[in-house]
Image (cartoon, rainbow, N blue to C red; front, side, top):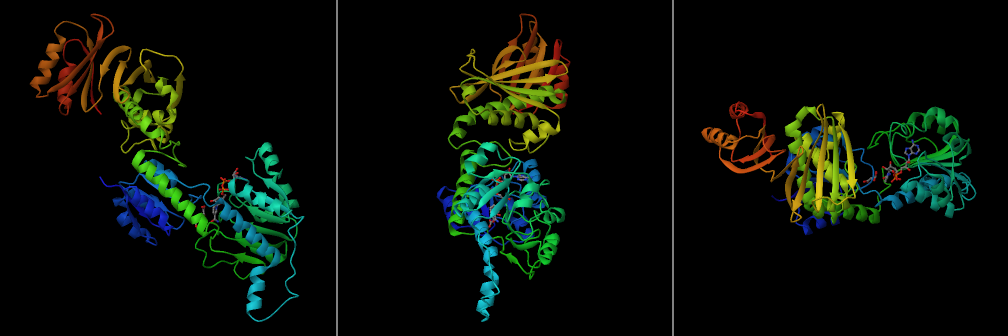
Amino acid sequence: MTVRVLISDQMDPRAAAIFRERGIEVDEKPGLTPDELKAIIGDYDGLAIRSATKVTTAILEAATRLKVIGRAGIGVDNVDIPAATARGVVVMNTPFGNSITTAEHAIALMFALARQLPEADASTQAGKWEKNRFMGVELTGKTLGLIGAGNIGSIVATRAIGLKMKVAAFDPFLTPERAIELGIEKVELDELLRRADFITLHTPLTDQTRNILSKANLAKTKKGVRIVNCARGGLIDEDALKAALESGQVAGAALDVFETEPATASPLFGTPGFVSTPHLGASTSEAQVNVAIQVAEQMSDFLLLGGVTNAINMPSLTAEEAPRLKPYMALAEKLGKLIGQVLGEDIRSVSVEVEGAAAQLNPKPITGAVLAGLMGTYSQTVNMVNAPVLAKERGLDVREVRHDREGDYHTLVAVEAGTSDGVRRIAGTLFGNKAPRLVELFGVEIEADLAGMMIYIVNKDMPGFIGKLGTALGEAGINIATFNLGRRAALGEAVALVSVDGEVPAGVVKTLCALDGVRDVVPLRF
Ligand SMILES: NC(=O)c1ccc[n+]([C@@H]2O[C@H](COP(=O)([O-])OP(=O)(O)OC[C@H]3O[C@@H](n4cnc5c(N)ncnc54)[C@H](O)[C@@H]3O)[C@@H](O)[C@H]2O)c1
Ligand SMILES: O=C(O)CC[C@@H](O)C(=O)O
């Protein structure tokens, strides 16, 4: 089937060109209303966005074929990530493509405040020549307080140091080593508020950072501080900021981002010392080319090769690793389906164990595929994106174990499920490095291709049983494709995995259960 991507925001044309070069059909439709987007999103496998498109639950519900959302930029607060994850849609961003550009915008706004450039420009162009009105301040020697010292904050720090500013940062996740490497001082928030002549914000908007510059915190700032927010609206209490500008506690404030966007009306507009730009932080041609190329490459790698880069809601998997992992993921998913269908609700924990060649690979996708197979027995539309979340919601304890030992097989993936009956283990290998095969089933050596419709039967090993089983299936009109047998000991417990050509109705399961010596019958679907 043709792979189709929709670009629903203004994006550099190189994004569309890359999709087309890689054989993906692409439509560019910036400016759709939510209803228009909802009406067409069902036709697409990928959605490439910037910040204007809001990917809500309603949009995701209509996105029946969507596999990936690519954000050409950093912040993904315009995407309902839990809803995307629940529907198995990967969300990826481009975390570095616009960092320099945004850091430069923060510095530009700092200069704009220091020298009142917008007001001076407006006054001069109005023919006023108010030379004495616009007395500025130097940046040299001043203290810059960074709130958030990640990608963008760090770049702002290096530029500010180049401008001979002293830089102090509040960031709970900034290590002392990194602070030394950047040449900045790590401080607590109150100290930053007390000491900073300029404050710039560079954090995401989270429960911890919302209103980090609250009325109370603005009151703790050094009188005459200048504040720049190029990160996210909501980090500053806008009403309190207006009051602080009016009282002179804050000498200047520049916002590129607002609590409500587009910000076409704000009480801050017209306040003396207030400067604004319409979310232009990432808007340079260089940054837009970077993020457009990056998002298109990442989405194409995912849609065509299964490579996962910069995903917010699933572990990374390079486009080089993906083909090597593909047969393992097929094996792992089959094992997950088998153990889920046989043990069902009784599974409390899952341990995914790899040995031999499998132990050399990235274990996350293998575990993800086991969980996708397993959770698919309880819920529909499960894949590697939402399976770990669903497993967590069910309280499943999931472990990954890598064994260095060499076993009987060159490569092995085993799944151990903790149940009320103790630990139950199944394992599989790859024949010829590509064909998944079950090789161990609850302590019984067996070799089976897990595919199509199958029946799992546990019975007492005794002469004539296989004949009776074959007759019962024949009488029910069910054709046997393959018969895979294993047993613990002669005349002990035996296991059969029978591959059949059609559905196994409940009545047939009942008939098989009634056969002499049968202990368990489970119809399986792969
Ligand atoms: N204006 C724009 O156009 C534009 C462009 C790009 C990025 N952004 C925004 O800029 C922000 C920063 O981007 P980034 O790439 O530097 O992100 P990042 O993840 O690299 O850095 C964020 C930093 O914030 C820190 N942080 C998290 N919680 C904190 C807290 N409670 N207190 C203090 N620090 C905290 C983190 O430890 C991290 O170091 C994001 O919100 C992003 O969406 C805006
Ligand atoms: O796409 C944009 O213009 C804004 C991007 C910016 O908010 C980001 O978080 O990357």
